Length: 82
Image (cartoon, rainbow, N blue to C red; front, side, top):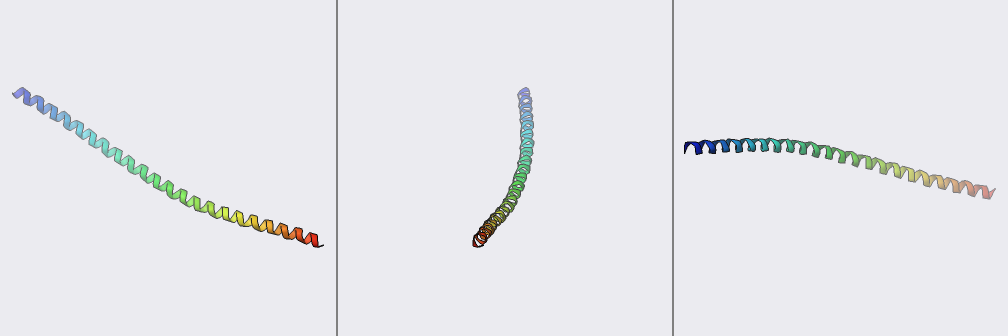
């Protein structure tokens, strides 16, 4: 009976160690997940900023292109008049 108790205690100690190891592993994984989530959020924010900047540049290019085309039409029209 005493031997059975010792075996059971050893099993419980081993299970407790395994549980502690799993808890530590879970904690490390949670920290990694938090870090990855933070990095992802930073990248999403940066992409959003860059997207806004790109849209501004595209609009500027479009307006300059239209103005350039209008100037070209005016110049060509003036040449036809003279």
